[in-house]
Image (cartoon, rainbow, N blue to C red):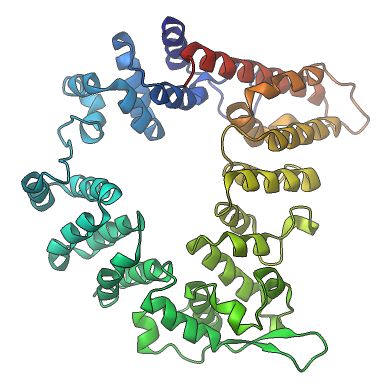
Length: 460
């Protein structure tokens, strides 16, 4: 549509100097809206206006995150242009129809030739594309040259098996446990431990269960830990790294690796039929609690176990929201990634309502866009509280930037009452009120602009 094409030209022409933490004014950062525009245009099946292709390719050259959506939108003409301008050669490597256009899995001869003769990047792309469509065919292709690949290449190729990982991959991964490269062995063990029914997961469950028990002799049952006293050759073959990092005790290092690799289903039977919530609430003797719970956090993320993730996260309003097991912000963010999008947004909204925005940036980054109503309201309310406290808005610039891109445009009307410059309190930072008024005005303007962008593109 003509209005959408004009909007795209505006987005591509914008080059604001918004670096640093200073005053940004009220103008939206249009380049930050370009990824959303491209995603919406591609979802509607539109093609790029020919006259905007050079600017679009320039934008994608400078931002690798834009390239997949930009090249899908640009279509075959991007490849034609890229052959005429060395600055755009990235399109030849990535776009359909480029010099490295990938053969279809059923084109056996072209697949074989590219796999055996192609550049490393081409081979990685080929393996990834086939794995996404036909997992077994990709694994079989990899096995044809596995023994002759360089160690660093084997590691990259093995990583492609994360896509559509399943029980059929176990024999290949079990063989990789004997690889001459330690990194390859470790990756194979990690992938096998993500398959709860694999033989490696069973071996790890036996080892880990021998380290953990419930002490019922006390009035309140507690978990007793007896970490391994050695790392034998069978443990090393199954991916346990024997040498501990500097400053880390060997036994705790081995113990953590066993716990994170054991299927989480092991623990209910081992610990008296308790639920994950009941297990993580048990006291742990001899200061092993943080080590044990941190390993369970890693296991929940690796095994995508939402039930254990909920137990380890705990209630978002708990003191410091550390949860029974998630003791760091990074762990919380990873655990949240295992939950359904709606539940994830509700937890983060509860966290912000209880604790404010000081630690919310990483958590917000994992939430689906646009933010849900409760999450968006929690963010706006917390920003309003920060404004009333008299702090400078650039202390929250990361969250404000996320809000501009992720807040539901329907929330724009809720900002109208925040556009005036508030009266400065005695403890307020000088001039903070004016900065906040600008920040909220920019946020409201950006939300209305995003709504207009979608209207111009029409229904999906």
